[in-house]
Image (tube, rainbow, N blue to C red; front, side, top):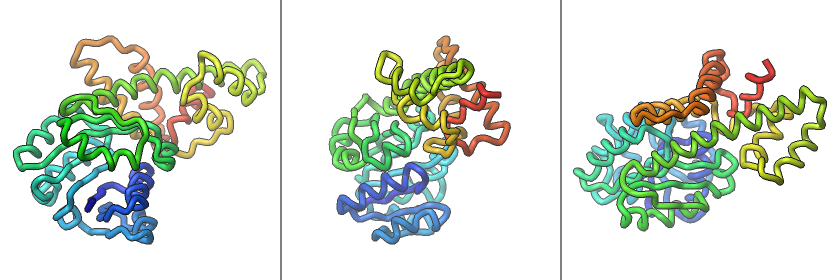
Length: 286
């Protein structure tokens, strides 16, 4: 297919590489050309603006940072909705506001486009391996049309329901992660305080009922004090705030989410937003 991919970051770069490797023709746009160099070397075409990047493409995929970025790339004067070809799939894989996406999706259909919200889980590890979980909202027929693309980037790919259902599923995912990553940090901090061999401890408890993706992937990083970002704290704070607001709108009690959001927000305010989410261990060490 002829694809435009907008947003070449920690996640977007390897996701776009999988599409290139599968033989798709790829246009790319990112604010900083240097980030796109690996893809340019592999045959992707870089554009200085969104409008020419998306023109004539059969599918447009976005993987940007924050809701304001999603709004800008879709609704801006030189954005996707005004410039994508009629009938094109427009697929946002950013984690963003469900309400914002529902509004964008409605406007996209009015212009003859086929919108899908398709946020992902699995971090940079899953993006590089092509094993992301992809949760998709939108029309079933559009999901089927986009499925071959999703299958190059992920493994567990589910059509969750109508517009926004992918984003709501991602909110549930982030709520679950909040408790899991904090639980791993607390277990490691307890192990440190009691003098355990931390790697041996993790190897033991990760095979039992306490085991989780967070423990297997971020636990060893916490022990090694490796805070390089697979997923930025600043982006997790954004996600947790979105989930917290969705919960408030529905009068839900989500105390673990609220507490973990407070820990991460304090770290971001302390200038640690560019660290990986595993750096939450430092909040316990302090």
